[in-house]
Image (cartoon, rainbow, N blue to C red; front, side, top):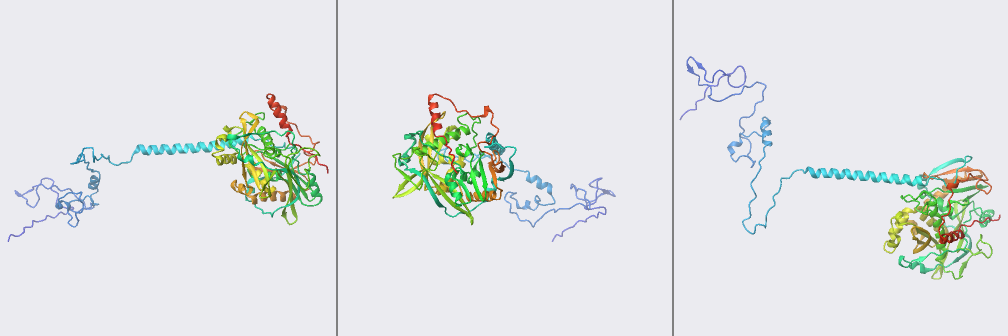
Length: 569
């Protein structure tokens, strides 16, 4: 048996490892070669502070198929060892690129089963750049959209900067109420009671329900019928009811609807408040804006500011009032058959031809000792199963499709909902006031007519394109008109005015801000002998002069102009 010869290990007193023989690998001592030193094996100098690694590791498992196939080499692989970080970095930077083409199919034509050569998946910088550009473009469009909206609202408010009444220096402002406080108000009133019905009504002609834009009807002019828009204190019936102490607060449906729908208003308006003893009267001035109808009041598209323009707010208001008066009389059966009530029209003279209208004097209970009486109007009546129902008649008017963006002649028959939605956006306040007036009058149905100009530049001749009926309560729900909030606004204003001293006051809607102001005015304000500073001559509106037809139309407009009656006390 051959024994294992173990060589001697030299001792190094100066450091780790074998002694450093830098002079020669074979040191000659006494003429002999020292065989204890390994030949041709380089040794790096070590220090005692250096970290030593493993020479070989037989405890590791060879489970990596990507490495070498020789298991004997795996024990010398230190790529994952912390002692050799440099070798791990070298391995991580090494990539094997297979440049061989894919194998061709052995069977079938060459164009079948031809695999597409796939490029290595990587982050596409061009796609990311396009996404960043799209995000920037979207942000720019949003910024321009909000900027245009703010500019439109500024232009809209700038176009209606004038107040409905000239504020005099001697007027004393008592309070200003922002509309934001009205949104949270709520008040419930019991069902009203009818105190008196006056006037006479004609029956509604149902043939107008079948009108379409293809068989339109020309709007007629009623020169001989008189229309009355009498304020509260000039009404002889209200004066009689006030003397009988039937109520504490007195108003008309037009004034109440203005207060109820005030948060939706944009144009300026004013209401005169008179405190006489323990009674409160809400009045309108002679020639007030309440006698006219607003057009495109809540639209974002500004109207021309020149008052002599046929599409200005003032001209369109006169045109809308003219259309509504004629429409309310044309859709009736004018055969002399009328429904009469307790009393005749209180504002008409004997033998005078008046429009079909009935006045319902109704009373609501606001508090234990506070009642409100209002004069409400209905324009027609119809019978269904031998039961009579009251109607209110109103007309929407189209003046130029370019302003609204919807052509009624093309959309009314197929997209009537879109037309109504556009009108709700552009005339939200007017439609809400009509609905509130129908609710106050207790009407069973409200008829809305769609009246358009024969030509966009002709504001004297019009045609009826359609007539649609709605139930007031259902329509109020569609336009988000809350009756509790309506009465909450009225109750809050009544309570505020009842705290004032006896005298005359005026509520003025600010022309540029959503708020209403209360002014104390002299007792003779707005009377015939009360002189206000007149407008300059260049600001006074002159009626447009056209051909002979225009002159005839002007005369017709004057015939249906609002007639004021001075009631006798």
